[in-house]
Image (cartoon, rainbow, N blue to C red):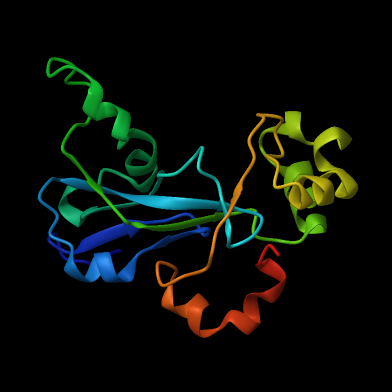
Amino acid sequence: MDKAKSDDYIIFSDPDEIPNPKVLNKLKLKKRYGIFMQNSYCYKINLLNSYETPWEGSRICKKKYLKSIDWLRQKVLSKNLRYPFFRIDKEKRIQLIANGGWHFNSLMSPKEISLKLRTFAHNEFSSKKFSSINVIKKKIKNREDLFLRNQIYDKVNIDKSYPDYILKNMNLFKKFIYK
């Protein structure tokens, strides 16, 4: 970031969040900060988590407004927009960016999900009732949330709303498509 100029945009994304490049290319950030509102998928690229969609994913701002990456992720939140004007402790100069991309959560094998849960900061999910490979396989098969929140994910069609890379390389993602 040392080479970025003060008016250059800085984007922060978790590794499983993909900002929509078509939206990004046309982006006119009218506020100080932006949040890419993303479709959230779990386990498979076509299992939509409608409970967490839109997902507050990638964040963007000009370098001159960046306090820290952690601040951008923890303090630039859509819920801030609901606070009254006198709550000056809440950042409200936020633009919500519709159709902002994709959040592919736990897009990995049951074995890898199990390892993730057993080494997760939230150690309450490391027990076998969550992290057992057989439990995970069953949850994926039934499109169920891992964390006992009574959520069923929606199987959706892979269409032109998906990233071009996925559409052009479907053969690479066969094991990540729910049948």
